[in-house]
Length: 497
Image (cartoon, rainbow, N blue to C red; front, side, top):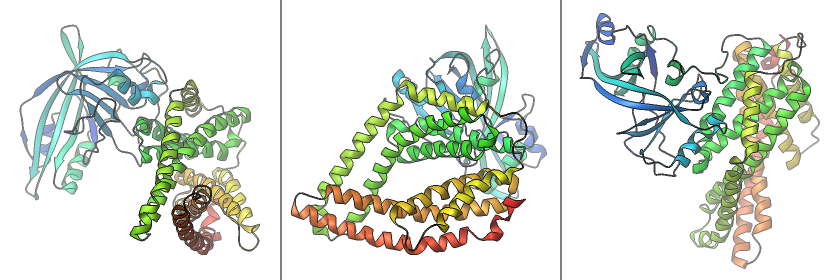
């Protein structure tokens, strides 16, 4: 496993997230001798003695954690370890949280909520983990790379049976040297998976979440894009209770991408089914959007207040307190909604939709480019319809359509390559500018509603609104240039391929 944090999670807290460096764990064949393998490649290997730990692995009856690359284990000495695997998601890394053995079961249920889907946890396997460290170096550099090798034996009666061997870089001062060693081992590695899914008879029966990652047809692109979004949702759900703004943003983005994929690839699906799933996901995204908007407003106000003279900063305190109170209330409502059956029902529907989409019979799509044309044309038509200076509502609509066109282009990257990636990146720039414009407009409206009362507060509210007016003007000046860059005809020729 990746190196554990020396800190411990407080009972009831969100946990301690660690990102080991480089944080890559590889599963290697049971018969491979790592020291001999590296020595044959010219490395010097110094191996420490073996240590042994007994673990109990927890999962649902149908192994839903293992199906999604997650592991929950209990070590009598080290306590709980909660590990999440990115399952090939390009922007996520393997992460572990640790907590004392005395951690309340409610915290464990919070961590694993999105993976369990309301099902109870239980001990599904008892194993012994044999660990030993190898220090690896060579004559080409002074760098020393420390590897942690683990062999997992399943306890069946009195005779443990080796099941899994894996290796991780746990310490190095030279990332390049570590990368070279990992590349060498990767040549002998086999595909990794959650340990519980590899133990017998604990075979995975839940739908396995892994991007297709090979085909470039319309169905393949949907499966790859939608699975990555679903993995991101599961991955960050366990951080929502701790109030992590980044986790909330990532879950909300995952929901939006799922909805966008269902819309972009709509001709492939049963219409009633896909519209119903989009509606469920939309309700979740709306609830999370209320909290996310409150977070953005609070952060934005705090930044604006710092630009005021010191005397006026003190007078702005009531406004900051009001925003913080509204944010706390919105978070409470969100956390309550996450405990309701509707949340798990929507998650189950999404997993079923991604693993078993309801395709229509026959080939109703001429090609991948045809799917991305519709959101792009809608965006282009919306911009063309703007007469003179667009108002806030019109620009917000452009922002929404730009986001949909961007997600559609991003989903087509495996098939269209660099042209689609370039279009997605430029639409992201446009979306950022229009997002700043929208946030400024929302903040000004909030100040209009909440800056009444005391004269000092009204005066400061006016100052803050004036600062946002400047940012509104800057965004209005910049968005047309961003649109020009994003809408160059030569960049969108791939849609006609």
